[in-house]
Length: 161
Image (cartoon, rainbow, N blue to C red; front, side, top):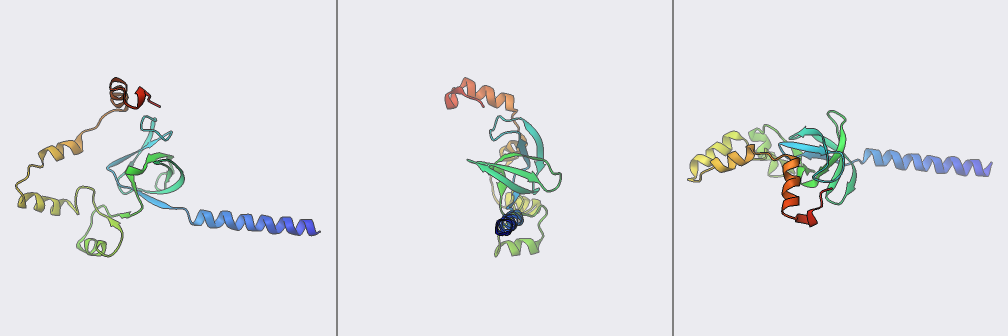
């Protein structure tokens, strides 16, 4: 009987620990225009899904600079580099109230600026040429091209995982 009580108590404690860990799951947000969800924690892993800017995800595991995450919107699970994630809530179309709130709280506004209107006003007030920045925002490179670049440049000993 003592053994049964101890076993039940230990099982209860384990259950409570697992439940509290599930409740304490860390929430992250995609902070890039299109976050690539990979099948393994490497830049050359197969892209299994793309998560949009601002998507809310749950942190499942960590491996170096990679995070195994699950999208709360579509349930897809995979690996994303930490550079594509933030722990700050993302506001896609901020209002003046959001911008004022951001001064006193942790908040990530639109990646290129507070919003398109503010970005345009800033560009009009300066004499800088933003055409190359705008062009770079639209550029993309395939995983095949990246792999070829790594091999031809013998970067990382030419090893692509």
